[in-house]
Length: 106
Length: 121
Image (cartoon, rainbow over all chains, first blue to last red):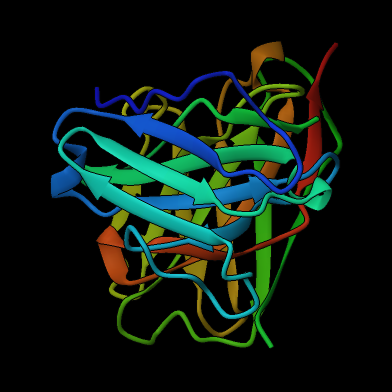
């Protein structure tokens, strides 16, 4: 079955840029989406179709997808961005989530 | 305004069948490329996709769980139901329903608040 791999954790200083990778076989041939989940809350869509932001998501969130890796980038990271982040794609008519990355803003 | 709300038992015994209902508003599951999906999250663990039903009544299931899952919809009630048979303590999780827009290559854009289900004797 298809797998999406994310690092368990990423740390960033406030105001710096955080990059969270998500890797999968030929992931660049598929659309990737990203979700932010804070403790005790439901996931929130932050990026869809590789690089589109839903209404209400700050411009500091951006995405890219090429080759085997999709990347979520948060520019000017703020303390409020500390959360778990999950990537998601489709493969063979099934939805696949990555294992999640805990972003710590130090 | 799109909303989804999950409902079902908080506690289920091993080997029983779990039935969860997603009641939604703000969209119609008869609209082309609209879907509703079930996703779960064991305590402290990652999201796991379970099943999806689309506007055309096509159904898609997790490969690893498909023998135990059944998804159905009642468009007149704006509800989607998921049944999980022969539950085990490893099925303990928060179960979410989510709207997926874009058909069978789309993305969950609205999520319910989730319902915690514990499997224990």
